[in-house]
Image (tube, rainbow, N blue to C red):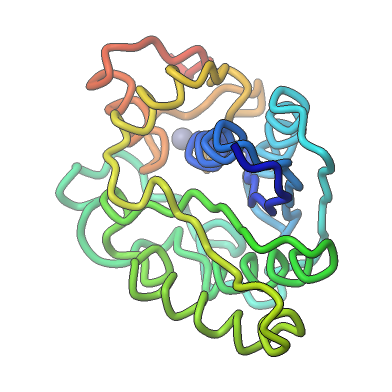
Length: 230
Ligand SMILES: [Zn+2]
């Protein structure tokens, strides 16, 4: 078993928690990175802290910047979060909850931290099945970022180490991700997926993210411990 440092992007959501647990199972020491970027569902950051504590990460950094200055997404602008969309509608096209260049921004921070701590591995929970429309959740994108990263860093240029971007959930369905996470012992009650929580702190049950999560738990034959609005 390896015992190396890995940077893990931890949003507080179900996917990133599972990707981090997979990294931990592979023997990596985890250095978690979360972002307060002006997102509507800032509540997810409490979950990120809980998940980091649960996985006993070596470190957990919260980086703040404000993507509301750019806007253009239902998560960072005065745009309503879509509700009650059909599975077919969710699977098609790029929804208004897409945040311009978000994964490129997140991975760039991960790359900076990896370089700082001499880590050669970055884990993130991208998934291209559920979010087929997201340009920055595709395998070609991840491969291209990895290629860029090795041109961009001191370690890469000096040939000391090669940076690998791991996206272990890329081809898994939500149900498969949940089953894998439960095998790894994740407490999904610590995670948060809803884009538009109620003031009482319940998940809305109707946004795309809630709907994908609810469907995933149902298909996995498991109970979602997160409270939903009735
Ligand atoms: Zn929701």
